[in-house]
Length: 319
Ligand code: ATP
Image (cartoon, rainbow, N blue to C red; front, top):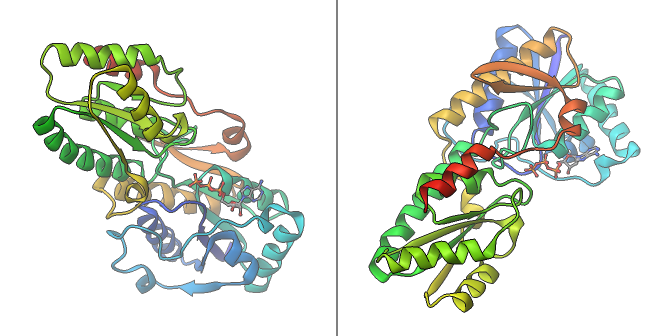
């Protein structure tokens, strides 16, 4: 293999730039040409492709977002769209591709692999919702952003004695809510993987209030429902004043943490190595601090699960 490509796809995540940097530098280290494809699979179909040099990825390791931009493309889900992408790969002589993104992006990578273009997936999403890796790139930064925000809310909560409901990202996965809730000492954590026992949420709030607790924090993953609806229900069921904060897109931005930069660098460099070693249709991951790779088909067939023991602990610590 003499020429490879790299793209970022789906929702952007802090640390994607560190991953792009590692792909480019590792490829050049191996004396391979590397091409940056802008705007994900959309840009691939449109031929928005340029050669990258060592300097192309200078001064980006600490930046959030992705210098290659990201996009979602319905057209690429079709056979015709994938053929368009393949035409562009052929035109530029690109023989293999590194796809940095979430599970949807890996479906695209798998389709290209099946059509003869070897792809390797690098898990980049703040949700941490991909099996086969303990952590995804961006999760740690998003988690720290949430904690910083909740700490500030906690200061004002203490002054006013209210119940604060914080809605965080996570349509199908509750990892951000669970980790943030545990790190912030939340009274209750509501996540899609666990049936919400609303009576228990109310009991915990009332118990805290009765023993003179000045503030209460409830972390809700967006997949469970609207933070405002939950706030209304709590207000009806208790005498507590409630305030709702939806953190929204601030969770996606910001300079990546050291952990995310290191994780991104390790995973992306490994992706280049296994692509050059002849592997295809694989996703790189980290498990027990060891670099691993798994078949994308296998990853896509598995459902993300929550760490039950951690969830139980969060309940035990907020009695
Ligand atoms: P996030 O976790 O942040 O949502 P993601 O990678 O899962 O990231 P998606 O929007 O699901 O985000 O997927 C990104 C892109 O991957 C899609 O817009 C589409 O171009 C491509 N893609 C998704 N599913 C398929 C598929 N079945 N076949 C081909 N391409 C796909």
